[in-house]
Amino acid sequence: MIGIDLDNTIVCYDEVFRRAAVEQGLVPPEAATSKTAIRDQLRAAGQEARWTELQGAIYGPRMQEARPFPGVLEFFTACRAAGIPLVIVSHRTPFACLGPQHDLHAAARDWLARHEFHDPAGIGLPTESVFFEETKEAKLARIAAVGCTHFIDDLPELLTHPLFPGDVRRILFDPSGHHGPLPNADVASSWLHLLAHCVGPAQRLFGGGNNRVSRIDTAHGPLLLKEYFRHAADPRDRLAAEQGFSRFAWRHGVHALPQPLACSPRAAVGFYEFIQGEPLLPGAVTAAHIDEAAEFLAEVNRHRDTAEAARLPVASEACFSHRDHLACVERRLTRLGTIRPVSDLHRKASAIVVDRLVPTWNRIRARAMTGVASPDAALPAADRVISPSDFGFHNCIVTPAGLKFIDFEYAGWDDPAKTVCDFFCQPAVPAPREHVERFVTTIATVLGGAGILLDRVVLLLPVYELKWCCIMLNEFLPDGSDRRAFARGEDARAARLVDQVHKLDAALARIDS
Image 1 (cartoon, rainbow, N blue to C red):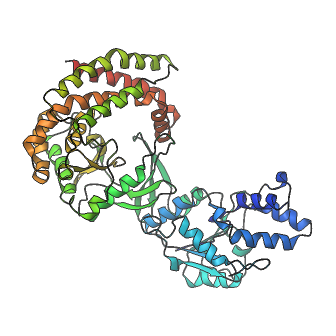
Image 2 (image 1 turned 135 degrees about the vertical axis):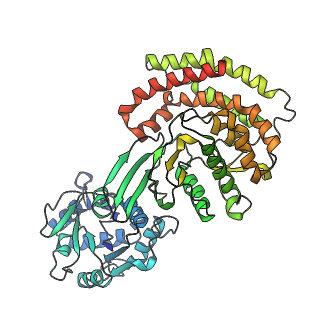
Image 3 (image 1 turned 90 degrees about the vertical axis):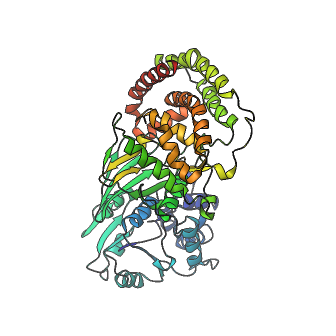
């Protein structure tokens, strides 16, 4: 069990102390560099009482202005995923010593709740695992009584106190480097340092294009850490979509995907079962693989009539009418028209859009509208599907127990025809087209209407071939480029652009033929 101090260890007060001290005229702005600097200046000026009052206000009503230290939410989430119990043990009096009698315990509990430490779907720290003690001696006794094996604190005087339990590993949290080495204690400069120290070392994995993924080796086995991309221009909540779909599947006995273990929405991180296996390579897809994928989709949808399923979100870029499918491609083509000519390669990509994509799309769109009586008619709710989205063999792992499917950041309710078309049009690990009918027949055992669904899939397949051509050029757009850089790093960007142009040429040649 790992015990952790609260104030100045979990909670970072530097900014709120700086703001409050300047507002009250206690120190000039240039002197308010940190909480410690403010304290030292007030004490040197003989204003110990003002310092105590300031502390009472900030640990009380102004505590909600404080923020968690960077990485602390990830640490708590990782410990939950790894099965490592945590407790918070804080030296905090019930009320301020001077000034208004603020309830300091209530303020701290409210802060923890606001930052979702007790959320059962996130960090999940039980409220009874938080202790406030009025003296240092009582805090040290509590550390021993709850059975801590490690204790993390920002105060050297607590860790070196004569009453500190001798069998507890001492860890000094020193993000500013004020204290240096401490006898019989480890020193950590950040929560990411503590994550490696207490949970396990992280090894960055490469391959995904949207998020950062790492393997963390713990005493209980490896975990997968996923850090989700956020961008002001893209409001989609990838973490919520993946967690919702994964938890729904696991609760209904569908286990051909990593088990979701813990997450922190505020930190945009999730922890999952680490799947040991190999990717499925292009050209290696068999009819048996097609059957596994279709059965996975069917199994998830056997439970689509439940109240829990109704609470799942709409999938990213969901399409519920024939015109929706066409509009999805047209939006992508419009965005590609904004490619900036910052390099020769960008200019080439822009020319491909104008000279090849748009004329090809005009032909496909005209053909797709032929014979469609009501293009704006909405697909009935009963005919919709819980879609993994971005579903295909590019997002699966081959294991001795069969295929495991991964990456559900865009999952939710959608048109089954779109799910099938995306599955057979994604270019990374192509699914042979001769298996389309086989795939539709399997999922229709749950959805029904195999013949109607197959007719719609055949009509829309060219539309989705063109959509995936557009997706290949996302790298040339600022938000797509930023997302790839977040996931893979800057160094891989140039090579990726060249690769995407080559893939697009090949895809357009297939469409033309």
